[in-house]
Length: 440
Ligand SMILES: Cc1ncc(COP(=O)(O)O)c(C=O)c1O
Image (cartoon, rainbow, N blue to C red; front, side, top):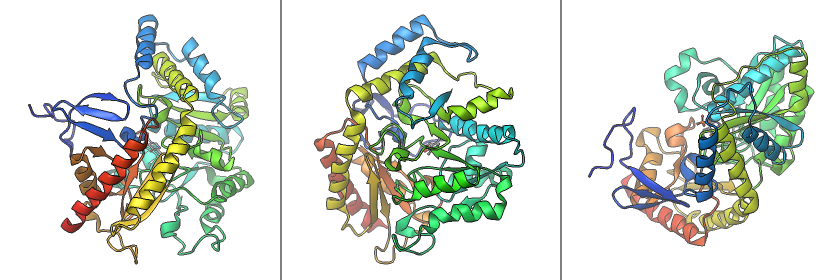
């Protein structure tokens, strides 16, 4: 029986029908077992098929299936209580959405609302970074810098962008630590250039995600960004949709540097894929200031959905009980070491970088000059497909999503993998690269 019976909205590049999933594995209708080395779209932190999640879902739906967000539910309150222990201190007001893009929209809109409330209505610009992905809605695409913008450029908001902290291809052609952190100082230059009185917020992924292939910044970068934002009353928005909830080995990536953003955006791992859900966590004092002047912030119909709240709460409870954030750090260090041991000498591998269970491999056609493959060769897609033939899924980065000239894959498995899976990932990737390289 063919796998795909009904075409997706646009036909998929993959002909796979997933029938069931358990732990870190996907099972297809035609009997294949695939290791999900991407955790889907970097989502499935706690692994699939957990019975206690199914029990919670059945119990909640049987009792309450919807509450208009004007009312409260025990599920929402429980989740908020737990989340307060997860987010950086002070970020204790939560607004829930159905996914990451909606949450980004909420973060951008809240920063405009806050600036207006503070008597700064001219502050409407959002500064963001090159090689970034913040979601697929129009304002999120405007803040992003990636290939997904291309068909919509004419209607996107014209917001300023600065270069990222990306040492492998430093936009300033410098090397750390002699560089004076030009990448962070670029934010101050841009704020001044735009006129600080016109800038509402700065948004960035704490570690570059799908538009660059998992790139952690240098140690001093985020503290310096936070300092600059404070100096100019520009709100700092950390987009942790991909890096949040333990993915990088800390609860949130900003915890690596003890940075407290004004707004933190989450999604994906919040429910581990058991329900669609996103959120923003906002400094409580800021929300109070808006409320005090009677500001209004409209909900989405599915904000605070009781089932999503209950499953998010259970996901976080499981992570706490099984110490999965710590596990992501430990097993992630082993994964990273093994990737480096096995693959760093491969002629296609330019750079291997990452943190926790958030790893990226940048693919180049010449290691010495770091020359990327030309985009039309579709190298990322070819590598992802070849790995999939060998029953390993890795998440495609720039080849499909990104803006830079190069290609990258991301290795971001569920937190419950063990050494067997690490060995399978590295062995399969090496065989895959060996197979693809002569065809290029
Ligand atoms: C950093 C980041 N922000 C926002 C989003 C958008 O989230 P969603 O796809 O859930 O709308 C993504 C999705 O990949 C992301 O990686």
